[in-house]
Length: 291
Image (cartoon, rainbow, N blue to C red; front, side, top):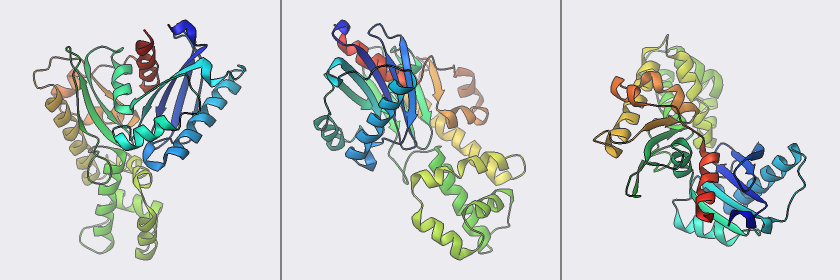
């Protein structure tokens, strides 16, 4: 059935950016590109625009003639696809792809990490989610509730806590530290400047503070404690999803990989490198559907 399509497309769309791969019907990758965010929470029209712009860039970079959308099948792993209203609206605004399949970016990360086979992932970036695909085909997830109440261990979660420590330092409830000095340098050195930054800050803005936590970990005990706590949150997700250690585990995402040294030893020992990323997972998802 894949031969009916000229190209298969895999999309990973999150709050930080969009990544796309274009493949032949036998899943040989021909083109790829990165573009603007396409999380559904930012608006369906904006998400589609980012995806189409990034897809056009992928074809242009590889000097491939842009095909008719009706010649393409597309699989998408999108942040916010667990919201059925957003997901349905996204389907309704399909600009013309002959075959389209949407799932969460967490599930496509899981599909990519274990080659479409059963396993466990915890994906950590701007947000976070843990997922398991069981042998019987069932799937379960934890976390992924979104900013600010959920997404434990994520970049936004770390940044929010770094900002809280900095507020305490600015008004004298704790001493200044390497981390709080870095945050004030980034956000504003006076209370008025910092309040101005906080008034505009959303998930992505807080996530930009996460690198400061890592950079301060060797010289600031509180920064290191935040990273250890993040590791414990990841471990809790894993143990909830796979209490009997039945499935292979991959900690995914740039931030997830950076947090591996801060995981409890038993979880660290179980972790194995993902076979592929979320774009590969999205491609696998649509290819399986076509079969």
